[in-house]
Length: 518
Image (cartoon, rainbow, N blue to C red; front, side, top):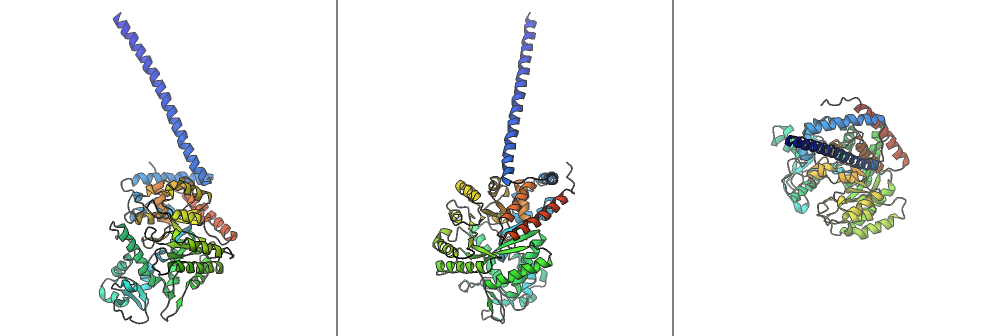
């Protein structure tokens, strides 16, 4: 009898456990189903925000691309490029298949690049410093604005003996000329110069602009450097460039000086020349005139206003190439936009009577400070785009306004890391902006100072850090094209049509690749 009870009890326990396991399995399946639905719904929102749908050919290429991306992510898991400093990651990046694929990507437009640091400085060293009458400053004279390592051309030896003729210095100082020139080039970058001091880093950064100014504004170099930029951009599959350019005077050895009217005229001719040379009618370049937000001008208000008046004049004289105005320099150390609100209001009123008003393209939100207010003013002043916008994700209402007003966001990932606004690209706030449907674009900012050219490295960092597929990559490129400052619809339509053909060729190329075997 006892054993019978045991058998019955065991049977009941077995039935109970079976029932529990069935219920648990059903609960688990239901949970996993709900989990998948939630994930699918969120991804659908992200995809809907792009407004883009992939063709069957694009979907096929996307499958291949994602498999390569996932394979290399696993392969580099112990040496993850997006998680380490770009200077240390650069060689790793160049050896990856994703990098080689992205080199072929038709990237559309660069919307945020500073003319003085746009093309690599090897041109300045290898060509510029070998021109006759090139001097380098070997002392320090802050009163007269001279710093160690500055360059300038003089018809004869200056009275200040700290100016040394570079050809003599190069010949007498070293036996290895190549090593000497490499040193000159490295000194014009931030490679190996980050000692962890944010303020000191920015001083080094600003100092480089002072060093190269005497080279870039020397007339025999100016056009060659801009040709160097066009060559490197086309090589990296970029068809439209919008340079931010501080107003400058250009000089030659005969005492002649030239202003930005001359530069603008020269750029019109240079672009047309390259359209023919490269058989690339869609090639275009635009100029955004700039001044420093931390200028030491004694009458800063009147200076900025007079510069904007000049910019408005150029805007109406050369509307096909000169597009607007910006204030540049570190936001946390310079004057905020609100400081110049009277001048901005006055130029807006003056521009209302012109055929072409002066559009703004303000740097804003390139900061780590919570109380920086430039984003508010950039939006209220109807800035066509926002430069950097790192702090935008912390302002929910401003994000809504940027999205509603379709204000392009110019994100420069590598620059943001090197200048210590973000350490790991996976944590870059622009990913959140992209996911919420804001018009994010990718630009290099100051690539010459960071030792590279073009856009491929920046695309690599965001693609691998954010796990972007071809849908999102296409979105980023189309954002850049749609937020470019085209002169008219003819120029815009030509740009979009030309890019679409290049994109289809890119898709065909990916479809020839063999996915990695696991």
